[in-house]
Length: 244
Ligand SMILES: [Zn+2]
Image (cartoon, rainbow, N blue to C red; front, side, top):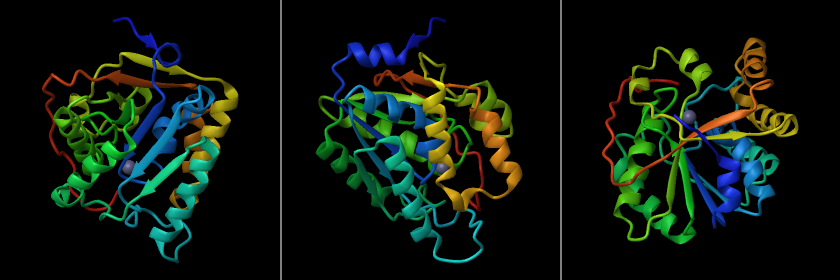
């Protein structure tokens, strides 16, 4: 299948406002750290909605209020990536699936307020299979199907490296095929790495830091799928909602 160049597509399109929607602080840096930088370069206004403070994640500091720590980390990472507007909510981490009714209406309103031309989130595999990732993906799709003149929807889809690392994620069978690739340079890669490392509380070990380098240092790309809003997509929640 032919994969289009996302940067070219963005340059040619009339996209002026991009909105990324993710459940946890750090999803944005790992998943769309390249895209945010290129959007900024192309004068696209970037908004980010993060639904939880990720308070049930790892706390490599061992103490302190993790929600507050991650709030600061998200702001730092967003600054590095050139995000123009960060909307951070406080819905329960690792429990978005059961609280969907509480946040879904608000999310729709917020999408309408921001009025983006392009929305980005996970595909139905959630890449890692985290239930928060999957439910945000399915809800965003449902909301956009419901909007009269909906924005474009692009899903961040897993590449081979991610598929291999998260091979235990049985929701990978619901991963979408990429339609677009975003290639970026070494400079953007270094900034992306800097934004990932800004989430210091999540750096569980030295080995994990090295793992991140191995993932991204020489792999300057992100894969996306342009979503047909008229299509139906299968999904399934595969992981137990304990810890990440
Ligand atoms: Zn996440």
